[in-house]
Image (tube, rainbow, N blue to C red; front, side):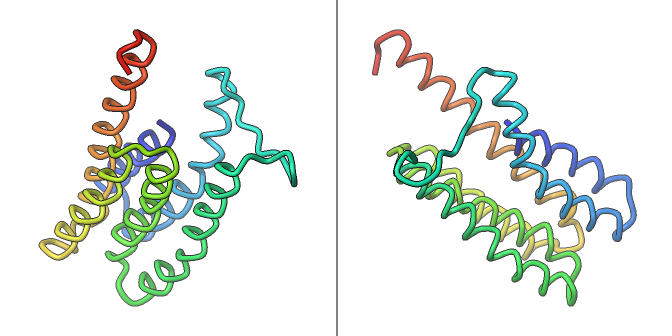
Length: 165
């Protein structure tokens, strides 16, 4: 949900702000997703706490490694954006979507794997077709991927609650 909120805001910045402001919005917005997640989980009662050492479960360790991996790949986005600013939203959209692949593999959720793959393919096609519209099209694609994935995960959760899974 946090990613969908931030990427939805990035659609608005893509329509209204200068290229420099759009660039900063991508950096600040996507960098804020983790913080928004932590805030939202407190509101929903989930309250994520990543324990340290032996207390940490394997899922947390692998997922945090995936987050770290994604952050490390941002040097590619930054370097690419220096030469081609319109590549920034494309690169960040694909790189930040990589975590869905790891999450899907760990939890055995095909919809998460589908999210990562369809997001990558769609973002790549949109960038190849129209790189100058990247600050609008990339966030729209990401939001659609989130909407589909959240819908499917909510439906799955409802089925679990009703004993259908």
